[in-house]
Amino acid sequence: MGSARRRASVGLGLAGAACALLGVSLLLVGPRIVKEQVIKNVRIDPGSISFKMWKDIPVPFYMSMYFFEVLNPDQVLQGAKPALHQRGPYVYREFRYKTNITFHDNDTVSFLEYRSLFFQPELSNGREDDYIVVPNILMMGAAVMMENLPTFVKVLLSGALAGLKQQAFMNRTVGEIMWGYEDPLIDAINAIVPGIIPFKGKFGVFVEFNNSNSGLFTVNTGMKNISEVHMVDSWNGLKEVNYWRSRGCNMINGTAGEMWPPYMSPTSLDFYSPDACRSMRLVYEQSGKFQGVPTYRFVAPKTLFANGTDYPPNEGFCPCMQSGIQNVSSCRLNAPMFISHPHFYNADPVLLDAVEGLHPDKDQHALFLDVHPLTGIPMNCSIKLQLNLYIKQVSGIIQTGRIKPVVLPLLWFAESGSIEGSVLKQFYTNLVLIPSLLDYLQYICLGLSIPLIISAAVLMAMSQEKCTLFWSSNKKSSDSNKANQATSAKKLPPVKGTVLREARL
Image (tube, rainbow, N blue to C red; front, side, top):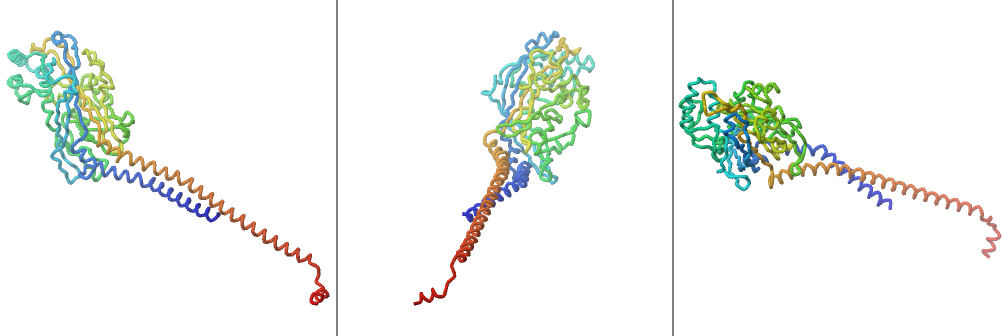
């Protein structure tokens, strides 16, 4: 019995020691293994898991367009407040892919990323042939641009506009506003003021967006330094742009807006946006989960489009108006264009009060990025921006009537996408499930080792006690026998010789 207990004790002790050793090994080596796998698979390397995702983005992106129809154009010409009605969404499936991928010796890679948009009628609230009343963007923009020119030039332009039957507002289809329409006004304006509109052919808000690239990006691959992966080295060969009035505003910071370095901290992230002609910084809002994957949510701070008075670092983006809008005329052919959050969300109330029909709401109009902090890969995002045109009465150009100065919303869009399907499943398994199992396993092993070792010690102690009792019992029995034998010897009578002799006889 004691031998069996000793064997069981040894077995339990060995099992406990093995569990403890495995638990400590996983505790010390597990995080290193996970980190090595993360580094191996997030860098820009043809052999990494994320390379194919980076090259041909498998995430289904959608661009939802919303237009602001002017309900009272005639009254606006007489100085009334514009009344707006939101139309849409007009939804487009967006495909992104990279070409001209070239690796360099300095741990960087260059590429062109193209975007193609395809209208999705089943997801839209309307069709591309819907007519919408909007400002005559080309005419009203040119009028403001020519405001400070000599009066005779403006009168000449006004006559040309009358001959071409141009008015301050136009009724165009969604497709024409988006992808362009032929307008003789382009040639007329260039004939009067050469070069003021440096393009020919169709005019449309997104005429150069579809089937085009966003410029030549050169980014770090992370092969030598993983903390630099995806960080922009240059854009179109430039280390900084020259659109703005300060070096800080001209700097190209962060990534190209697709992925970020791994092991993110809950502070902020930066990216360069060619569409906004600037770098943007989003700030951490909260932690959460997307389809079981841990995420950090980053949002736009109120200072993103603040003017230089409210936020001095933005002084370089001026000339400024109210906070909440940014003047992008310097990178948009000097046209009086402004970008903002949809419905003037987080903007100066003066902008909201200047028009009717806007209803800013955080859930509908705030942009966000949900990023997996371990890998720096976005899981869910929605980037939302509004395009606005500054219009006003311009003396000498009668077509502008008595329009009061106003930053008039034209449209806003939301570029949204999230990882799903097989990509999400692979991501979850490799980068969430397996590391979590390893994490749990180390604590399970350590937890099991304690009762196993205690049980082994108890059995060993019990075995030792049994042996001691058995030896003690045997010793007492032996001593008792010896004592009995001695007593018996003392009680025997002395043997006499006569008796022996009689016996022999």
